[in-house]
Length: 332
Image (cartoon, rainbow, N blue to C red; front, side, top):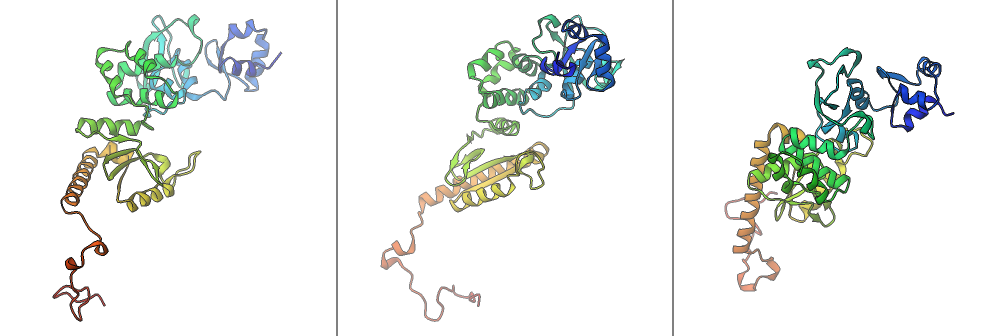
C-alpha cells in the first residue's frame, strides 16, 4: 500500500477521513502520518499535505472551493492580484471557518468573499477549486468590466479558448456583462494591456495590437504610424528576481531599433497607468497629434536630399563662412 501522503497528492491535495478509510488506511496510520507531519488536518474530517497550494488550503478550511479570481489564478491564469479570497460554498453550507484557523468561525475581518452558489460536494470532481467556466462566470457577475475582459482575454491567449467557448460563459452572465464579449481580445498579453486598451477605447483611441517592427519584433500597441506603446510589468524592471530573465536591457535595445526607423516608443509601468492614467493619456494624445502633424507637413513639403536637388536650387556657399548663418559664429 502506498503512503497516506502519496494517496492524498494523487487525489488532488485533499481527502476526507472516510475516503482514506475506504482506501484501506486505519486511524492509527493517519495518526502516525500526522505525528510525522507528513499530513495535517485542514478542517474537521479533511486532510492534506504540506505541499498543497496555500490558497487551496485556505478555501477548504473555510468549507468550500476556490472560485472567481482566486480559482483562475490557481489554474495559472494571470489575473489582477487581489488580497480577497474568493470561496464558493453549497447553499446549505454551515460551520464556515476562518481561512487561517480551523477552530474559529469565519469573521468579516478575514477578507473572504463567500458565494453560495456551489454544487453539493458529491458532484465535485475537484475538491478545492470550481471549474474554469464557473470561475469566469463569478468574475463576470461580480467584477468590473476591465477585470472581466482581462480574465476572458487571458483564457483565450493562455488556454487557447475559442471565442465560441468564451461566448457560452457570457451567455450565462448578467445582462450588464454580455456586451463585454465584443471587447475580449486574444492579443492581450497581460491584464495591464487589457486595461490600457479599454481606457484608450473610452477616450476614442483605437490602437493596433501586437504590431511587428523589423528588428524589434512585436510591440504592445501602435497608436499612430510612428508611435508605439509598451506596457511594462514587473519583469521589465532591472531588479526583477522572478523565474524568467529581466527584459530591461532587451527593451532598451528594441526602443533604439524603433527610433532608428523614425518611431517613438511610449513605455509605461503599472504604477503610472493605475496611479496617473490622466497624465499617461495626455502624453498619448499629444504623441499621436504630433506624429500626424509631422506626417502632414512632410506630405505638403517633402524633404528632398541635397544631392538629388537640381543644381539651380542649391544654395551657394558664402566665401569665408562655409555652412555658417549670417550673424552666427561657427562652433570652433
